[in-house]
Length: 479
Image 1 (cartoon, rainbow, N blue to C red):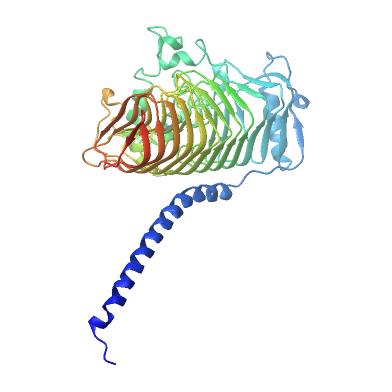
Image 2 (spheres, rainbow, N blue to C red):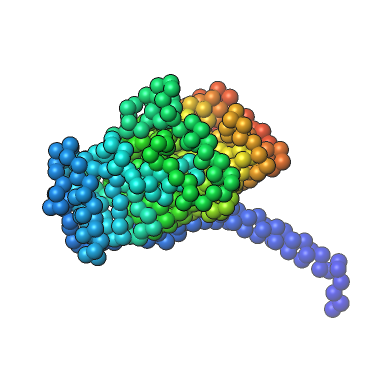
C-alpha cells in the first residue's frame, strides 16, 4: 500500500492534539512542582544546617565567683567559666536563677552559655568595660569599636540557650542618646553618632578603603555596640532566651554560616533595635521567635556601599518560619545595607500584626547601595495590621540624605502566596523601581488584602502576575 500525506493526515492531527494536551498537562505539573520545589529548597537548607553539640559538662558561674545580687561585677567569673569550659573540650556554662551584672561576654569554641529560668544577665553601664576595641561592624561597615555585649569572633560550635533574659540596660541615659534623637534621651550639644568624628569619618574610611584595623573608634566616639554578634562563626545556636534594652542591633550574625535562632524573644524599642540582622551570612534558620522591636524585626543585609562590593559575600539561604512580628519598621526586610546582594529567602507560616508595624515584606536600597535581591518566597502569612504597605519595594531609600550614585539595584523573582491581610494600611502593594532596571517577576497568588487606602502604586516594574488576588474586595487581574 502506498502511503501519502493525505492518508496520514488524520494521524498527524490526532498526534498534534495529543501532544498539545500532554504539553498543557506537563505545564500544570511543572507549575505545581515549581511551587513545591521552592519550599522543598527551604527544607533542604534547614536540613543542611549543622546544629552545635556539646559534651555533658557543666560550669556554674557561681563556682567561679559570680555573685547573684545584680550589683557586683561578675565579668571575671563569666570569663573564667567560659575559658574552663573551652579548655575541657566544651560543655555548658550555667547561669542560675538570679541577677548577674557583667561587662561583655566573649564566647569560645564549644561553649553553650545557658541561662536558667529566672536568670537575668545585666550588662554594665560602665562603657570602659567594653574596651579594648574589637573587630566589629556598624551599619554595614567594619571597624574597631566597643565590644558587642555577647561576642564570638571566628568561633565554631557555640550557643546561647535557656529561658533566662539578657538585659542590655540601654535606655534614655545609657547608649541610646548617642543616636542623636531627643525621644531617646539626646540633648542638644551633646556628642552623637552624626558628629564629624563618628559616622562621617567612618563613611569616608569606607570610600577610601582604609583597612578595618585602622578604623579605630571606641572611647571618645559615639557608635553603639551590637547586643549579640557572632563574627565569622560556624554552627551557632540561639535558643529560648529573651533580649531586652539593646544598645543597637540585637542579633547580628556577620560572615557566619549555619546559624539557628529558635524560640527567641526580642522586646527592645530603642533606636536601631533590629531583631535579627544576618549579614554576609548563609544557611540561616530563624523560627518560633517573637519580635517586638524599635526597628526592623528581621533585616537581611550584606554591607554598605563600596565596602559591601569589596567584601562581595551575598547573604543567602535564609529561612524564616513560625514567627510573630509585632512592632517594627518591617516584618521581614532586605536592606538597606545590601551592596553584596541577597538571594534565596524563604518566609512561611508567620503572623505579623501591630498598629506600629509599618510593613510586612520590605526591600530597600538605592543607587549608592546598589546590590541585588532575588528569589524571595513568602507563603502562608497572616497580617492583622500594617501602617504603610503589605509589600514595599523601594529603590529610592534615603534619597533625602542624597544617597544617589551609579549602582542601579537589581530586584527580581519575588513571590507571595497565601497571604491574608485584615488592614493593609496606606498601600496594599508599593513598588518603586528604577527606569534603568525595572523590578522583574513579582508574582502574587491567593493574596487577599483588606483596608488598604490605596490598593497599588507601582512604578518601574515589569507587569506583576496575579492569580486569585483581591484588594479591598476587588479582583486584581494580570497587568
